[in-house]
Length: 257
Image (cartoon, rainbow, N blue to C red; front, side, top):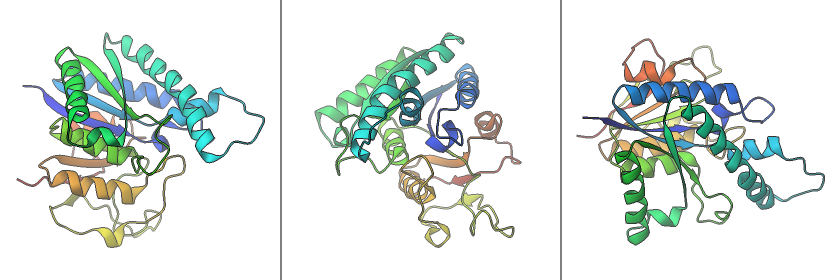
């Protein structure tokens, strides 16, 4: 029986310090997902990075407002990003399919069922779904807070066993991570409130942050799904996590029974 896992990789993992896409990091991520697939995991990938791809591709010599930037860079970047994933996964003989969604598709009804059916038939035919928000049209209050929220909804929709949120830090700490006295919180029981430890700031290149990851993880664990927050910049982090290597830093939200 294959184990179903949703992996969300954030913009801070996929981008370099200049804000452009880190192709080396994307390649390392693909290598790990290919290993998971070879070891009886069904993987759904929720990937940020379209904006970074577009920003690195286009040179715009006039000013754009925030909505115009989001639409333009995402439209151009999504093509480049999915093309990169296509080429890298093809080296392992893995077929990929693109799923662009919007928040309204998660309301009960026909759109919800169609979206679930689409990803189900992809998995049944060993196609790896790569999911992102449709940024070219989702520019209102109906947007997802970020891809953390999206990945949580996908994990629940597809009844995943595990949701992994990859960030650029090791997990949730009991004080600011830069504090030398900070201790990583390894496990979070259901209904254990960690809000006092969560910093409100957002990530450098994405819309999320640790507050978003904590909110998503708390909701998803209530649905009986294991959630892990870990550092996507660590070598082989996904492989180490599924092999339950205790030495690997991460924060795990224990699912409700």
